[in-house]
Length: 209
Image (cartoon, rainbow, N blue to C red; front, side):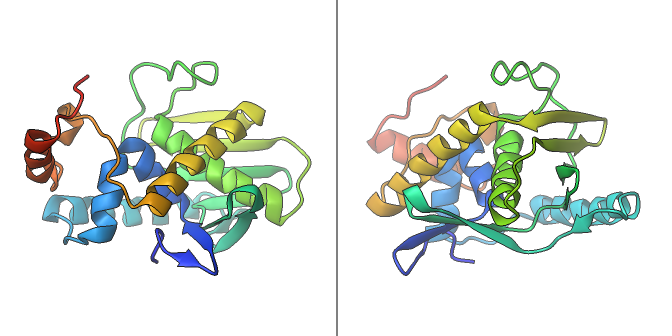
């Protein structure tokens, strides 16, 4: 899906790419405009993820799995489109399965949730979709299932405000076609775009953490 493309003047965004945007906005930019083949290690990790998702689904038979959903964020001219790993509308809940371990320290925002901000953002996007699509006015539970534990919390106004802020940043990137600012750090060691980022840094210094 051309997630940075415009369809009838509406920007189409998937929660998965929104997750990647929070993790590294520059990688999303490169993935769209360069479309390089993913490294073998990353493809193997994706395959492992599919296998784990299969086993997780066997334990959640009362949920709807991998159904394509969409909702408009009308005030931003954005359409969110994606497939939550699992969800239900009564009681409303969104579940995301992850092949990674939980963070060792809680995220300092949102009352110290034990989940990565990129994962929280993706799950919030799915919560937003089911809230709008099914006109849900009850609290929506978000569950992020890591391989070594579960982060569970309620989708609230602060999270929706964070989601909309990230979508605004994404929209600016798409409309202006500008390479986003990024930081080169430990998480970049295995990135296929690391050398490209280093070359860019030589021309336009990148702030370091």
